[in-house]
Length: 125
Image 1 (cartoon, rainbow, N blue to C red):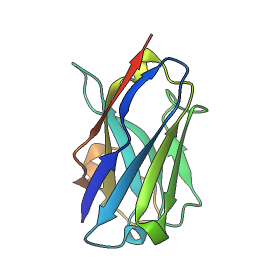
Image 2 (image 1 turned 120 degrees about the vertical axis):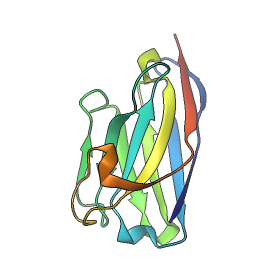
Image 3 (image 1 turned 180 degrees about the vertical axis):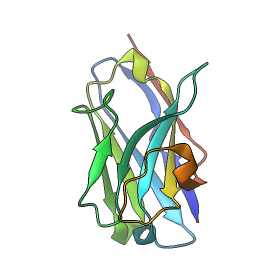
Image 4 (image 1 turned 90 degrees about the vertical axis):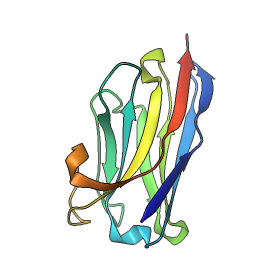
């Protein structure tokens, strides 16, 4: 399965962006999907995950209440709506497909088997 993230860019603090991730090769509905991010000089960190039918999601504490993960299996896509952006949200954002049971939320990098190339989000103060 291949994933391609898009939608990054430069935004002022307090603004919003919506990231998209297109899934190809196999149907997105066969996977739990997630978002991670890596800020300059830091390790990659978990942002959010959604199970295959979209009925359960989880968000990192750092983004809870500001970011929302969603998916559209008919379009083979997963999204990350990012609101109230802060400079500390600046990072390369990666989408990924879990290698676990698709009805289980996945939190760690080693629980994901497929990764997109990343899209850069820069939040200016």
